[in-house]
Image (cartoon, rainbow, N blue to C red; front, top):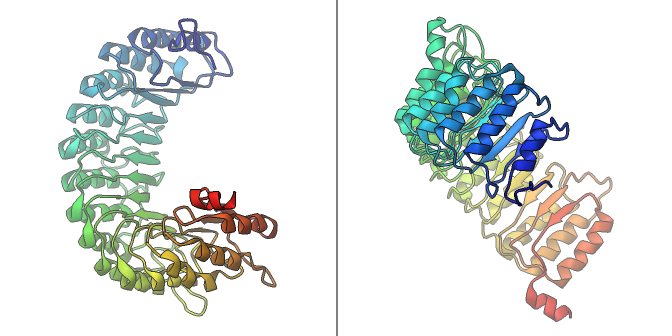
Length: 474
């Protein structure tokens, strides 16, 4: 690693390499501990403007205080055709603010964001005018694929409305024959204090023109830790499906900890009435969801399977659902001798108060490939209940997380010995088993040694041998 002639904090050697067009320096990464201020950025901008560097593709330099003037010069350098290979940018810190964002974006706004495919504006202390500048600059980009705006709580509803207004203004002038963020694949607006009004603005922006021309790309939307609530969900459902049957706007939607509750999830489920073409993952973890909406979800998974056949992943973690709700959910999925939803493959039930009976129902499902039952306090009795269903491994599950369930070593040993059994024919698909947060001692370690021989394909994650067990062994 090159630290530079000015000491280990200096970036001089790195910038020298940019100037010398080092073919090995494709990604310029400047850690926060480095000295990367106005002088360094202005020098870098000058080098890029000359066109001497033809190899650099990425600049990652978040965490550094920079003036609006220096940011403006970097933005101007990125406009030049000589900088066309630089496609990914992360710059500035929480002091960047609206002024810094606007200064950086202003030159780029003349060419709709230039050649940038990925830009990180997360944790930049921006508010309304910064959000407006980003929408105006990149809204009509034909190149931008990834946009990170998370951890800017000053944006709020007002900032999101302005961001969307400026991003879509040209679409309206074109009589809705083009789209805002037309090739965007990933948008992260988490932790921005966005509520129902901002959610509606986003939906209106992203659905603009889709009735005439389908969007080129589906978007992975990260919108967690925002006060979206029930009303926000009633808007966001339109990104999952539309009555016209057009392709889903979003490929994945994360609404972690958005205060949506049962009514919010029920509102989202209304999207399942229509084809959700390409919609593959929904994360509604930590939202105060209970049995009521899970029962509605169970019905939807079973009765609307044709509309949601692309839905592969569902995250329900950190919702107090309980055994009855989870048993109903499992009952809606395909089992060995029972028809049901066969599309869902990944299910996260961590911290859902899933008890012994519901966890057993999980293992009966035959469509799932990965399931998390982390931190459900299953204990030794829970492990004992699961053990008969893991004799010889599992015919469909490739990954099982049983971590954090506080089972005693004897129960862990019994479960491992059951998995170690080789049926004829051996049809186990199990490849990863997580057991951290359960008791591990000498006996477990001995079984694991044998497991490596009997089932070398199986990776088992567990805690280190507990101290008292280790002492006994010595």
